[in-house]
Length: 95
Ligand SMILES: [Zn+2]
Image (cartoon, rainbow, N blue to C red):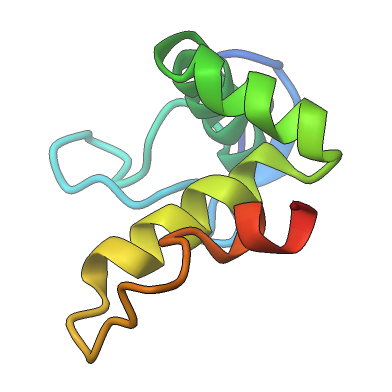
């Protein structure tokens, strides 16, 4: 199996989609950064963009990523909405 060092953490990882996101624009067909580095970079970037979510999550003592997923799921969900209840179930549980 071909291995390749990650451009960020320099770890030698198998060149498969389990370790590297596929990218047809690169010569190897994979990204230079391994998945865990990419995820870490995404998390950092995301943290900067959403400081309020992190604040609220720490107050509620929940995973901030869960808060975002719940929010995204609620926005995507187009089914019947009970307007008499708070829109966010996370807030409802904590209250
Ligand atoms: Zn890496």
